[in-house]
Length: 191
Image (cartoon, rainbow, N blue to C red):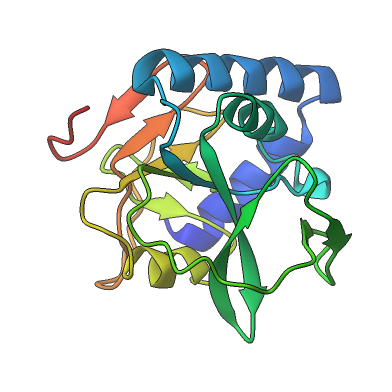
């Protein structure tokens, strides 16, 4: 299927979830992530803050867990059409941007490129790690500038069941996908 068709289909599937279902599934995804990857103090995790109106995975579960265990947390922020990575702490101040996304007030790019994990938002991911996001290309640009050892991990309520037919040459696939049911590894990636 084409990305545009998948984007539409999976936005509808998300909207059909109740708040309780979305939270329950987010908890299962969080549990699968922590059980599989076992993040450690001092590691660096880049993770998105969920957009409530798009019923994204509730990553606040992850963020609270990481901060409580001295795992460094970085979140994306778009500044001048570029996605930067801002480190956050328990006392970080946030504001809502024009897209309705809560983000840190700070515009200071951490300059970090050797993350242990990048937990990536998406609408759909196929069985090869190709993903469908919102179509802006921010994460492909971001992925180009991180260490080859960084694990790029998608999180989704749904398992892959269709191929993406219009993958572009500059699309960068994920290493893993975490769903409520499983952790999938792509192209021989290993822990």
